Image (cartoon, rainbow, N blue to C red):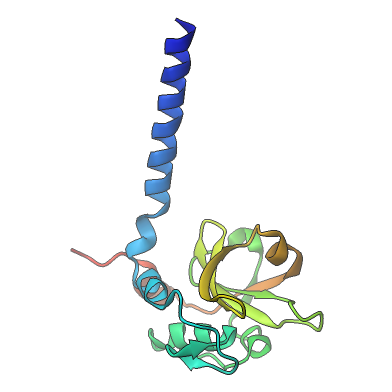
Length: 161
């Protein structure tokens, strides 16, 4: 009897996790996430601003340009765009900033949801990372919202079928 109960609980937990994972990835079909997914693995290139190679701000600049939004090619300059938001209010498309050099804002990525962000890392190229990874958690500085509602909807809504 206990074995049956234990198996039932395990099956229920597995089903809930599967449904939670599926619900959490529903936005994967958004235009922004499709653009990001197409760029995953693009190599890091200092000063890079094209799909041949990106630095961090070149990646965010390129990504946002796909939606006709201009950003400067410098993480500290991008940190002056839009307006400040608390980490607890992040939504997909917000820019997240880090101090990786010890001298102020030196890295930027774009928040994609579920505490994840996409960025061009010097050791990996374009990748997705968690804000909760110890490296980024210790170096997080701030976030900025640069998307007005119309462009936010365009970038993050699933295409109509």
